[in-house]
Amino acid sequence: MNTIISFGLCPYVQRSLITMNYKNVPYEVKYIDLFNKPDWFLKLSPLGKVPILLVGDEVLYESAVINEYIDETTPGSLLPMDPLLKAKDRATIELASVVLTNYFNAAIATDKESYEKHRADLEKNLTTLLSGFHGPFFKGTELSLVDTSFIPGLQRILLTKNMYQDLQISSQIRAKFDQWAKESMSKDFVKKSVPATFESDFDTYLVNRNSYIHLFKK
Ligand SMILES: N[C@@H](CCC(=O)N[C@@H](CS)C(=O)NCC(=O)O)C(=O)O
Image 1: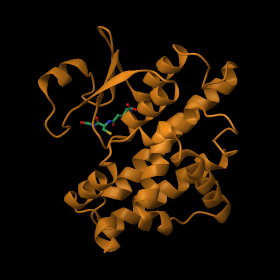
Image 2 (image 1 turned 45 degrees about the vertical axis):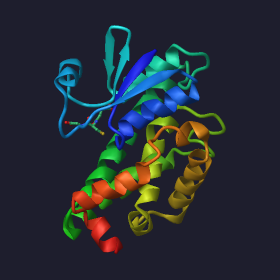
Image 3 (image 1 turned 135 degrees about the horizontal axis):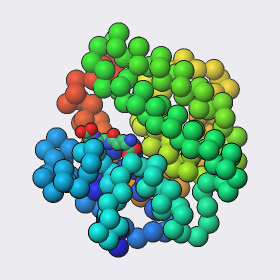
Image 4 (image 1 turned 180 degrees about the vertical axis):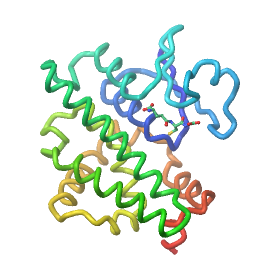
């Protein structure tokens, strides 16, 4: 069985868990403390980052690569066959990674100025991402690797309600966000992709980081 090395709050790990859940791939999760990385992990992970997926004696890293491997080794395909369409999806997945970073930087900002700067980056790149959304999933009725790559972002933005409400995005873009989130969050393969304590753990993490959005929520 494959083993995925995880940190419970990591959106990149969650991308791969969503993909494995959707594709019914059995796996074992091993959690590590990213603030105190074990030596065995540092030996395995070239960048010292999660996720890594252990496939027998082989080590895979980078969530987008892990997702493609899972997809290609299981029935059905979450990426198009056509090279141009496939390249476009990969580019969108890269954009989704940037949006995750913009969100994270806004979420952990400790003052208003920095929060607003990162929130502006988030608004810009989230708008570009959502411009390509068809609904109810990103490309239509079928789930794709674009969905599994950004559902962790949808979930986190919704969790930080004050930031979600603050977002300066058009009503059309917000409607797309809401449709995508509504379609995704109720699915079992998404629910099973985070630990049971995810919401409170995320909240505690933001408190411990002295985050501005957490402070002004109160
Ligand atoms: N591009 C990587 C990003 C992974 C990543 O940034 N993981 C974070 C946790 S969410 C990490 O392991 N950070 C530890 C570190 O940078 O030291 C991927 O998609 O897998």
